[in-house]
Length: 168
Image 1: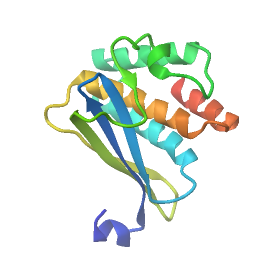
Image 2 (image 1 turned 180 degrees about the horizontal axis):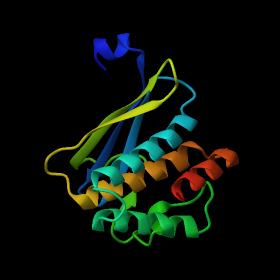
Image 3 (image 1 turned 90 degrees about the vertical axis):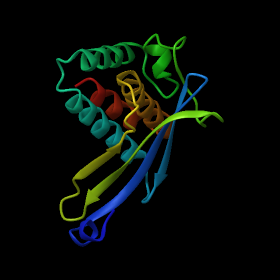
């Protein structure tokens, strides 16, 4: 974050990196700048999900329709702290989530999540390499969804909120 953003009242909440390795695994690393981070992971998912749908040119584009269908599958399955979003979306034979990235990372997506001090609103920034595919972007949304679930284990009310956000 730059000096002007800081002077304008913008503060970093977290930075994130999404790794894709050569073993068809995706992982998310979050570097928190504030505490507590559990609710911020839910806000990150909601903001990232919305931004990706927007960047796919709205909810009616083919890529958005695929992503929305995968999210629908996840929400229709039993949803709790042990949910594996890739299993629930019937994607486990294609890609899976790993807490830690593999040794041979082939693509990294990154960004930051900030808050405005005067009103508490959040801003998300994304940095994608030019070589990123739509498929990887779709999987990145699911990976952040999984990370939000994992970060909120033991907090039933936060998981309910996360599920409700994903049903919109």
